[in-house]
Image 1 (cartoon, rainbow, N blue to C red):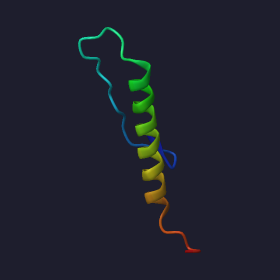
Image 2: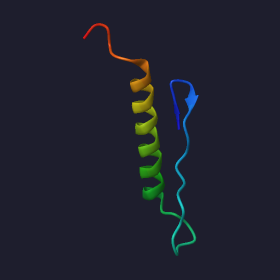
Image 3: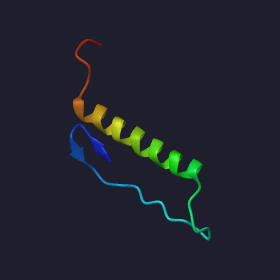
Amino acid sequence: MFGNGHYYGRFMLRPGRADVVPLQTRLVAVTLADQVGATLADARAGPDPES
């Protein structure tokens, strides 16, 4: 994950007994990583001075 220009880590997706991880599962993993990265970037930016 990247947030605010910094690398914070990564999510690892391991398939179970299947040879291929289903597309829907991969899309969920990408969405979760994107959300965490955005949250970390927002948290490091500090409070909004206009609020």
